[in-house]
Amino acid sequence: MDKKAEEIKAMLKKYGQEHLLNYYEKMDDVHKETLLKQIESIDFELINNLYRNLNKQHKNEEDKVTPIDFLDKYKLNEKYKYYENIGKKAIKEGKLAAVTMAGGQGTRLGHDGPKGTFDMGLDSHKSLFEILSDYLKEEGKKYGVVIPWFIMTSEENNKDTIAFFEKHKYFGYQKNKNIFFFIQGELPMIDTEGKILLNENGMVKLAANGHGGTYEALVKNGMTEKMRQLGVEWVFIGGVDNCLVKMVDPVLMGIAIDKDVTVACKSVVKANPQEKVGVFCKKNGKPNVIEYTEITDEMAEAKNEDGELLYGESHILCNLFNIEAIERMGANPLPYHVAFKKAKYLDKDGNIVEPDSPNAYKFEAFLFDSFGSVDDMAVLRVKREEEFAPIKNSDDKGVDCPKTARQLYKKFYHLD
Ligand code: UTP
Image (cartoon, rainbow, N blue to C red; front, side, top):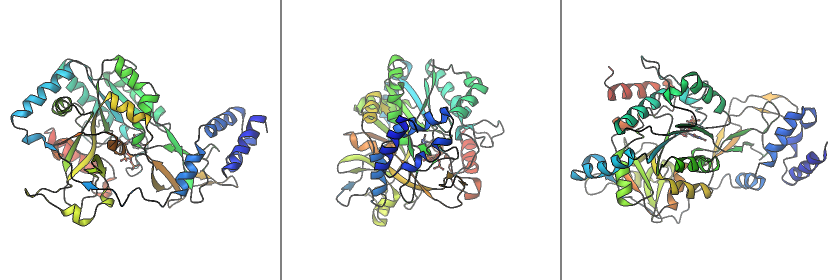
């Protein structure tokens, strides 16, 4: 073993992860170098801490959770036009960019390929990426601008995503002029003993670090810098799997500008008190999103004097940020949440194991965990049927699946 590998081995031993070099000697030089680079980039203290704290919940019993104020887009009355005009002016001035988070694994949907390449079964057979690009181009035309589009991928799907865009001539966008791709960060997956897994090639088994990794990835990859060069001040960040996502909303933008907040989020009313969604709230006086697992039935059912749920504003991953807020958030690490998943790996005898039940921990940061770092933000309630048609599951699950999304999409665009 060469000197560098020996040094790395000694370091790994300290963290109980020396098995990562089990296949090193059998590798060619290129793979050896890649593996050492991967290992050098891992924060082993963090991984060991995450393992030690696996069973600790993020919930702090001392947290004071209270309802958050929100505006209803369709109850703004004369203020609607007022906000809309402010937003329209800013969009015309080229101050808005869109970010699509497309780095997820889409395990529940089970589509072979990046989720954005999924054909949701419209007569046009358009992919999610094409649906989003059609929308953005149309909106841009209304304001006489091209809305710059930033697409976040993962190491796992970046190549396939770019190949797809290449094949479709970037849907009329121009690469590195008004469409940009960037790759999000990753963390190793670990087994139930806290050992980092190797993938079938003997490399570290890495997985995207969650949509909370978006801020850091935007900053580290020079995307916020690029946005500034383009004159962008506001950034809409949304998922790739909501085919009705409205990335260009002058009312939302007008509210953010007028109220001088750095974050403005859209919500839809919970379908019922027990719906399994995160809802906006205040935690210790700061904006936040609380998971359905964290609120009591009593809180979930509680209503105000108008009969509205006190915690009824669902977070739908439709959020607008001032560019400075993104830069600030990108500099502060977010907590990691853990998911227990099925992960193919190389065992200590060199066999590739494909488990049929979960075997590994994956760590993900959530975008909304950064909300607590802002003093105030605006929440705008919009209509579910206009803005929220997610594709999470395969059709057999019956909810948030291609079939339900297709119905909502066709209804909204009068395609039936
Ligand atoms: P989800 O949390 O629904 O995850 O992502 P997913 O990867 O699409 O699906 P599952 O959980 O594996 O079935 C919501 C949005 O955030 C993006 C996804 O691409 C989707 O647009 N995302 C999620 C990322 O960009 N990176 C991540 O690490 C996780």
